[in-house]
Length: 575
Image (cartoon, rainbow, N blue to C red; front, side):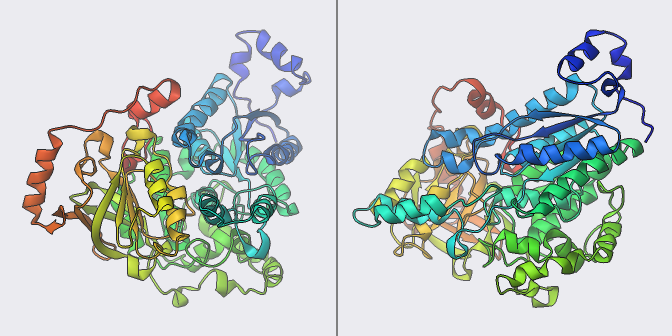
């Protein structure tokens, strides 16, 4: 492969450039080869990051094989699971921007010829994809894959039940707690439900930025190492052909991703991340696009938390390519991908390679057939998985993942019980203050309110409480974990801290929502139903007192909460 090195002109400007690289262990001939940035989220912070350095070692071999020279960089991430219940959660979404910015720095100081990215989890994947769009180099993303299942096909989210009972007298034994801690996360990789981590791996593949079949490979199997090595070889082909991120991340590619997201029942956080990635390329993904597509696309993924099975089984069943094959008449098959071929060509190649049949034997180990994990179109029982709700409580929109919500809870009307932070709402659930039928409201948790933390502790407390499960809904301007179950409406916009109607709702007011009608409204004041005009008048009167001031902040937390966009615009920094 005869490639012209992108950094050649810069090397003539300052001799120290080559000397510094050779001082890092490069040979004299290495500095003349095409140079590939290998950027991963490796670190000791959680199971999704600990193995990534090993994947990048394999990618290095692939780059070497094709005549390039790789350099490995790390910008590690942190885990939402370690941030539950304390102020650390307020930094989680802000970390997406910090990771993206650091990769931009790494990718801009040296004139790299291409880039390989690798991450497993919630914020590092969209951060890396945002950076890829910003840098616009030939780029391949290598997903970190899936964790092994826990005992009895459980996930790490057994923590919700354990943690609730820990706070109630004599509700859990020390042995039960210890057994969970020893088995809840049995290997490296992303948690094995279709949370945000697994969803964003799938989104990277649906966008065309991974090799086909790469998302959610079991992190302990040989396939994931082989895939990383192939990515190392393939990046050199992209460099040779000059195929950059902007050639792949087209409007049609984003539409394909939203279709796949709808079909698999992905995390509501994708409605933040995909628009934020698109903005890096000057594209706007309107909330209406998600709703329009979810009205049409059959829900095919029988994957926890919207369904029964775990992400490892989803991969064995054929994962994203199988979904794409079932939905090929709805997709843009002519979009370019990192293979240098179109999506349609990739699906044909996978069929010839026996990809869809080869792993079914692993699925049979669990006594499963493909149709039990990925429904054929004719067996799908409903359309879509996510809805955008609008109304006088959410003039700019709100999001609900109705595929993880019972049919009985998809339309409700009830009294609001309002809290100004999640901690107080969670304690109310623990203490039994929340009553069946309440619509629990948590506000000032949006991007400018407190950094848009997730409400997983509270949603899990509700569904794990027999008295409340199936009767209590939650409405918030914060966000949710991809593992969230139940009637959980988030991303309410405008948020309370920006003076949205949510700021002026009071306990005892009546709230109503309907997934079918795509509505979220205040329909009564202090227990008495009112006309929309009466509600508007009373909210205007209440608004005169203004919003609750936010505490003084510093550092990245201050920068993020002072400049964050609405959740409906991706919750990145404003331009």
